[in-house]
Image (cartoon, rainbow, N blue to C red):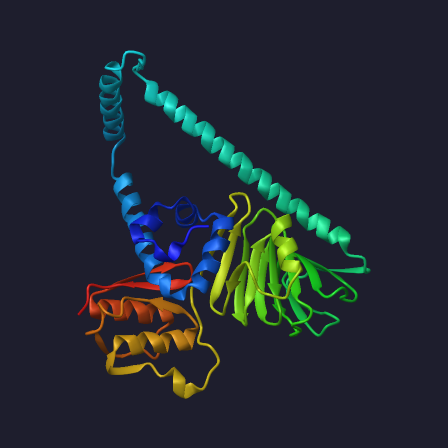
Length: 365
């Protein structure tokens, strides 16, 4: 296991695991790096810097023309050929279009990667059926064929607001130390708190685990699976045999953990798991006096701290670089991202989202 805490940004940007997470939103890597960030909150700036390096590298690569790439390959091939020609027992013959053969090899590698992704996706879909078949208690199936949302009450006191064209399956009584329901479509869950009996929602290829909270799951056929959290904490993980075994055997919220104003989108076919903030984050329920956004010569660190408390989001910035930044502004009526946008314009900074965090890029004031 790599000790990523001591990595430099350029070392992290070159790490294969980190690159699979940032560039391809690989589901397994997303779970690992989310947990790593939660266990190493002081390394958000490191991750943000490495992410910026990757973005710059990708942008530079995209600006290179196909002719430039072909010319560079041709130049390197001849440079290698000249060196190897001096060796008496080794000779490399270059064909005019050898790089096309190399491209074919890359296509084959990609095809193998795609096949593995498809196989894993099918295994997760099969796991849904396996778990459903293991329920020993009598099952109830509720289907909403109307045009309005339908309220379903569960025996533990939890409620499910089932949306049109959706179906939920659950046991009459929850036994064996856990509560399990199966969803096709979309539903909003308000789960009765019971730390001794975790609540699981299985939706196609994604599993959601909670102890007591409210959240929405959207999982229609041939669609991405989305989980949005309103209150509390939710753990989300792909329905692999290994992940299910780990999550069902303890009460800890592992996998990728979501908090209010966060969402996860899981593209099953590509096994792409992406966590982000919802488009319009809402204020958390707290005393109104703590939600004032009137600033007058306020240090930027205090401004960001107020936004973090009010919206439950993580704002990453370089406190040393921005130590001389102050804000005078009234931001009471604007939604979160408009607040952030106005702050950045005022201070000559920029922002971006990375894994449900807001990253502030500034050269100082």
